Amino acid sequence: MVHATQTHSPDRVAIVGWTARMGAITAQALAARQNSPIASARTRLLGAERDGLLRRSRPLTGHPALYTATRAGLRVCGMSGLDPCRVSASNALHSIACAEAAAALERCYPDHRVQGERELRRDEREWGAPLASARLGTAPTGGSLLHRPDLVLWPEACEDELPVAFEVELTIKAHTRLTDICRAWARCRCVAGAVYLAPPEVERALHRAIAKAHAGERIAVVPLDALPQPGRPTEAPADRTIPSGP
Image (cartoon, rainbow, N blue to C red; front, side, top):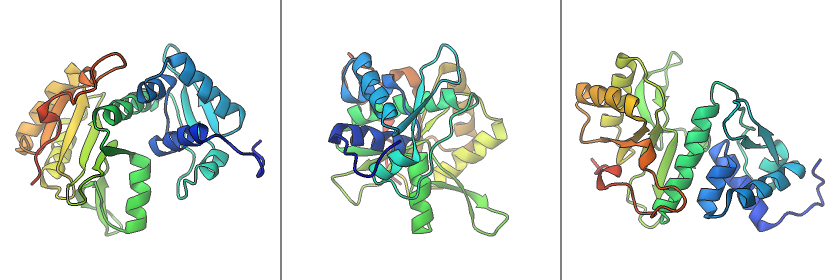
């Protein structure tokens, strides 16, 4: 239980805040983000768990545990408008990959801010308009049917520069569905472009959908393992990582 009078170190609050923004993180992702040993990152996360700020779950045997912010953790880091993230066996692999991708992007682009899908959803709800999401059509209620990216890379230095949407695609979607999403990203004007991070078997399906949607100038596909890991240089994976603006 977290008491109102309990204080927490800036490092702990920052870790809980990053967890809340991403939805779920792993010790491996935190270690990559902080360029620290995994054991050190795990100790920090377990300390926050003991304080009731994080919740740990491991729905998949043989894969890293996932940490999510509790309601107390959300209050401590000042994250209003967000509920605790729910982790299950069905979304665990994707959550793990997104956390690792977020950490790698932060290291590659230190002059940018990386935002998670849940935080984007909250901001778009508050603004009442898409900020970095693609319009797929009209919802049954009459509003826009949006497709939100897993991560958004926001420029910090230039307010006129558009963000870049990142999709972590681990499985092959139905071709029609994937083509519709690629077509939506191609005509989306609130982002500079979209980048898909995918394993080889998914890359082929993505390239087919991008070609079908005539979206090659607005969407890039980057191998998931091309993102830098601890010990590797932290340069951007490739020039094609950031598509040119409209």
